[in-house]
Image: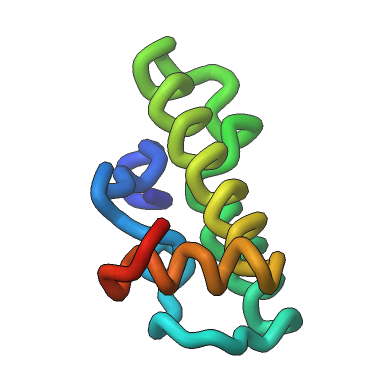
Length: 92
């Protein structure tokens, strides 16, 4: 965060919708999804923590990778729907 110069911690059990601050839904506004990725990405991008201790840089790298994976899942209709079906208890 800007106040403590540390990347935001992301809960291990957070799903892609939660990571990007969206309600689970079959349809997602691509523009809004991209804006959220950019907004949240600035909080965890490893480039902002280049001079930080190694453990902080590692945290930023993991958080950034998870955020990018969430965006990839939600921006792909099939992946998004597969994730939703599994989240709702269906076959996954």
